[in-house]
Image (cartoon, rainbow, N blue to C red; front, side):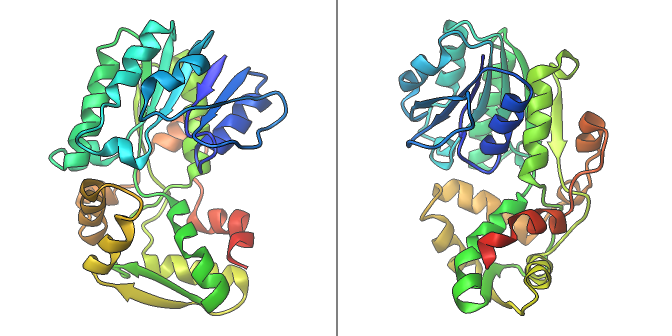
Length: 279
């Protein structure tokens, strides 16, 4: 049995479906009740309270660990979940980490995530780490304003990074959970092209067949919006990257293709699958 945390999110949902389609027994974990694919067991748990995960881990052979934004805060103790997995007899953990662990190692949220990576490597478990850059699905933040006002707002409109499709992250994670060849690997996941927020909005407008106006936010405006959902440290670390990406953050990684045998999806592909959210 494989446990998927964050199972209702942009990575966890397709991962849960992929594992179920592969014939695996899956336990999907989320904070709130949710509909799941046929045959998938659902357990409510809050990873901020690691012991709440204990019932989900009963009989598990593998765990996909996705840490929500509040677990990136300095006072959080997400490494406790690794200890819980060891105690529960889990054999393999695949951790969703962040590209910034390598490219911005001194960022406060990156220090916390590196501590989780280190705890996993030292745990004695089989492990793999996936380190995506920016998510294509961050564009969902524009869905309501595109639908109701025909506008989308973001900072640093002409600064791009190679955003990655969460479906690619999920497929790589599934491979790491199921295939021994990927054990002990660290996989940096990006899309196939550098794309700016303004270009992303243009892609959404093209798919809609109607114009969408782009409004550029200041850093302070963007930070105020982000800190409604994530810790201050994570907001600052993210804004540092998207305002002035370093060469390593602009690099197109070969790891999606190396694991999956195909090129990563373009942002246009993500838009085509999700355009209903913007109508």
